[in-house]
Length: 470
Image 1 (tube, rainbow, N blue to C red):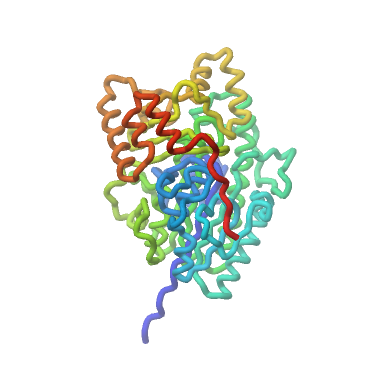
Image 2: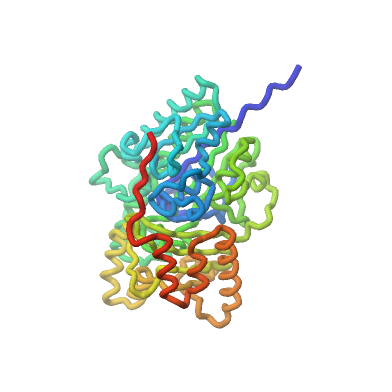
């Protein structure tokens, strides 16, 4: 009697929105017990300690996931759609007989005009993207449909937590649920890249509330998956689309902006309780990894590569670094940054930094207000605010001793060989990927040439607004 053919692997990608990696308990998260469902899930699979997003902004990060291409290769360099003809993960899996679904962050996760999900519900249909019970019900419906049509699935579930506005239990956002636990400013452990100020603690306490609700949502989604009977044949990946939405994190390329808490469960393939502390992986690797896991033939020109061998505990060469970038943030302001990180160092080139361009973003909130007030009497905080606003052309950080990126070593005489080596490595990647910022880094000492490169690449006006095909 012939063996029954194995069923295609299902894929469930769950993303958090603006989650600090070190909020998750298994990533040394504090306060203790903040993320019980994620901590339990981590014990059922593999944790990647050196995982990063390639762009620490929601829409361009999700475009990398959807296209498998770096931002300047797909054209989705901000809150705009990709160029015509770009590959996309949804159409690829649909052609292979998969059904596709998405909950939350629909426009941001749909950068290719021809992408059309089979099942979708957005923020306003999910309790403002902040209601675990509604996510549970929407997931149950999706899984019931897959039972009925007997089709494998690619399902992207996107929480809108812990994105701003953070959870104020005295003034809940309409439709949002209360988290299972509420936190006080005294329970906050302030990240090392922020000063420990009362205003910072007050805002981060509300961030913790949102993070707890994210964990509640993840738990309900996993409950729906378990109840569906699909769990044993589903590859589940959890990550955040960028770091926490405070100064010196989201919308930048510093270490805590791009580090993401990547967790993977794949029953029968990934042994429980595994941890990879040595290989760098990034979201550009997700598309080829999903293709490899599912045995689906896809586009040949993707920029990442499958890390399925790592899931099977087979080492991979060439995973000793990661490239990250920023191009345009919300509103269309071009603030290009390029970065290469290794286990030891992070090198950053900021083409936009000319001493006059004042950087700002919509993630500053009460934390920055507290810093601005403190800067009037604290020269150290004043220097941090100055760096945040205006940057410098190049930065180098020793990530082993200074992961919070507080001490720029770019002019340190003893590190000039490191600067040259990493700058060369970054430049080689820019050549390989046809990065429009290549002429800028080659002429970084000539402001007129750099300005001309920025104008040619990003133009003087805002990028076109993305309009999704219906």
